[in-house]
Length: 282
Image (cartoon, rainbow, N blue to C red; front, top):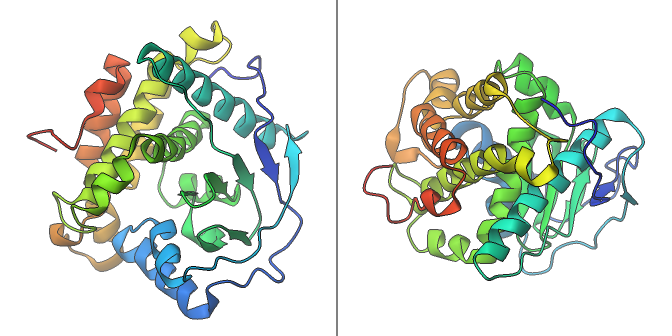
């Protein structure tokens, strides 16, 4: 994947090194619920935390805003900026104005969020309450060793997927999904996640065009993205966790579905092709 020449957007909030002390917010019970939801059912932890955290989220931590100096931090900044540039163009072409996430937050172990206490064990997530993406970079190692999806393109897919959730927050898809249920093969949650996968594919298709070639993915990179999508399919995660597949407990979609919708976005480059809410076949 090519990215080193891409522009940094300065949209990173770096909380690394601040430590988890004093995060509070949802208590041990809330964290346990979020972890169970993530590892067993694949539930977006921001959803769990927003429920158990109550109406008054903890005060926010503040990190260093801008472009990090280290390579891993710059990678997140460049990819995030490019994803936002793509969505700026997509929205403009639709006669609308795109507002990027308020930040992509890098942190270690635990941090405060508008949705409650974020934990690194939850994996990357988007919090609609504060419009921020949260990412502990230790997830990159887990993505490769636990899920078998290594490489920069797989990491970029994760960032693009989470910013895709921000796009859904802007378009109202989040509200639409909540009315359709949180579990099951045809649930609103599955439709939301598959659409975010498709949106990640749209970014992959248009990254080079928008950046003048400074950020680009070749066919091998697309395959890395597909592997990452497949690795976090509900059926794959359920087999590993409990030895069987329970479609009624799906929240993100099967590996085949996640690959297919990512591929649909990457082949079309068209956000309109990502309408999972009216699709006859998920």
